[in-house]
Image (cartoon, rainbow, N blue to C red; front, side, top):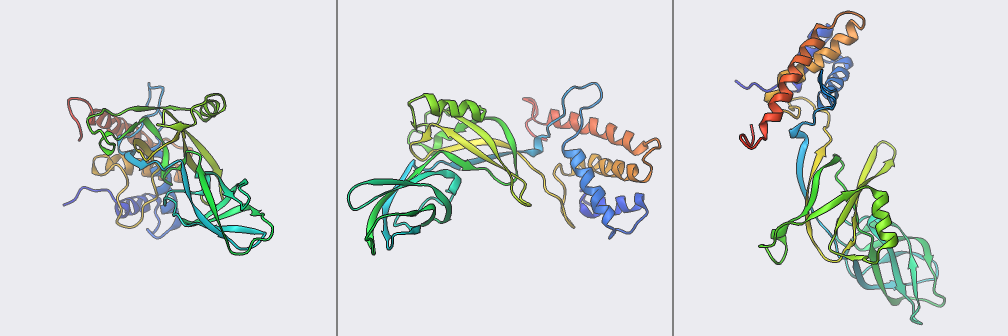
Length: 307
């Protein structure tokens, strides 16, 4: 018999305490509040900082992209904003990754254009129209310039530790990993402002937010300095942002923390029913939280790597 505390178990227990049917909307509201309380717990009595769960840390990697992409495009009129490129961009490239595109006219002059949108790996939409008089179905050369910015996963909630090169991905697998300094975006922009090293092997990085966009919430991006001069594989550990669970699904933390997760949800349910009375479920949750934190702290010591 499984010991897992999944959505269905939490649903039944919460409904029982609330005295409602499992289909009641209040059940999901309480469950989500209980999960949020467990994932981001308050500091335990006597401690100054909150605990960060090991199971919310996830090893990730990504490949950098070349600093420039060159090719040819066909220009057909004097007010063209859509550029169809002969050379495909990397699939991870977004409009935030591109500094600009420069197009060489018939007379050899080069004009820079800002990119409004990456419509596909071979199509860019410019913020202003391409201007060249007397143009009709002519081929022009272009260069797309990258700015060293990368979009982070939608479930990204923070970096844990340094960013390193995956040495086995490079030409010399015997070379040890290098650590990339993680700093704030203001200091990183100062490096671009005052230092001459524009392209090269990344030495520093910063994470910044893109702000709230509709229902998507805040997004995160990673800026590298200098702009990578080649394809490197970088590895990092991120804090994962948990998602709500549905029928049959198990919350992050698994069976080992199942009772603590349940206690957190029931403590929230008790607050809704008896907001001003002594909270025995709350007391039980704090005791369970203390046990889970201690278990999590011991899970990845040098004496015991893993549960």
